[in-house]
Length: 129
Image (cartoon, rainbow, N blue to C red; front, side):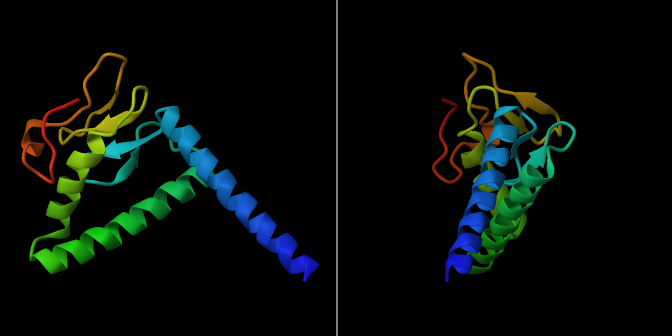
């Protein structure tokens, strides 16, 4: 029983470490939101823990987008772009993001959230904050 508890604690610590690595990579601008609703690497890929967490998030997003697309009768790409509008609106100062032109940028202090014009009216998105 003690060994099982130890393994559970190790698994939780590893998961927490991977999540911390992801948040650190995001704050450093290595991982960012993309216009298509997925995360991407804006610079050289971060460490293995951050990459694994990023890929895990993208897998969950892909499953969600596919499910929503099937229920709404639209393509998963359309759902992803709509989600991307919301996610881009949440990019914090210092974080990286990619718009549909394929260029990575970093949000700077005083800059509005990077919500493209095509996002107006999608999924409750209004104007940039």
